[in-house]
Image 1 (tube, rainbow, N blue to C red):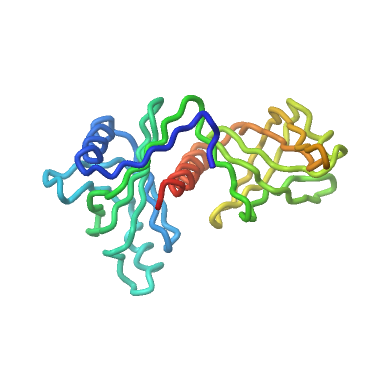
Image 2: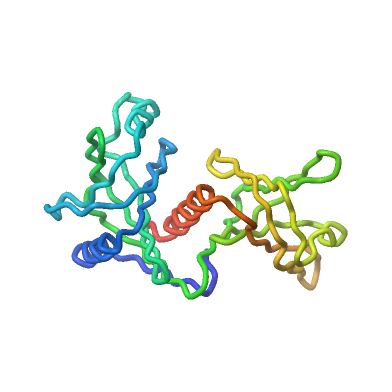
Length: 243
C-alpha cells in the first residue's frame, strides 16, 4: 500500500530494463543489494559489464564474501539465489531490480540481467504503510527509565508514524515535541532515534475512537542508519510489485 503521491509501475521488457540500468550506471548512483534468506545487505556503486548478457558487477566491501559464506548453509556463496537491488536516481524515481543468478569472485559479485523492474515514481516522498498483520513496534521512553511499545504505522525516508490508543497519551505528543531515545528494530537491526512530532491525526469512525496516529520526522539521523532505512523502505515497496 502506498500513498497517492506514488505511482508504481512494473516493467518486464528486456531492452527497457537494460536502458534503465545504463542510465543509472552513467549517473554513478549507489545500489543497495539485499540477499533474502541470509540477512545480507550492502551498498555500493555498480559497474556495467561489456557483455550485456552478464548484467552488472558490484564491488564487494572487505570481508563480505566471508560473511556470506558463513551464513550460507552450504558454506559457499549462493549461485542460484534471487538478489534484489535498488537504484536511486535522485529526484526522478527509484528502481527496484531483481536478478536471479549470482557469480562471486573475491572482490565482486556479478548479477544476471533482471527479469523485472519496479519503478516508483514519486511526487513528494516515498512512504511504506505497514500492512495489517505486521507486528512492528517502536519503543518509546517514559519516566524513570521505563519504556512502552507502540505499533509502527508507516515509515518514510524522513520519519515515521506510530499509534497511541488514548486522548491522554496523545496529549504527550503535541506538534513540535522532541522525543529522544526512541528505539526502532527492523530485520534484527536496532536503531536509537530522536523524533520531532509533526502532526497527530484522530482515527475516529462514527461508532468508535481508534486512537491517534502520531506523525514524526527524524532529528539528526546518522548517515549509516539513514542509508539502511532508505534501502529497507524501498525493498518493502518493491515487494508490492512482485507477482
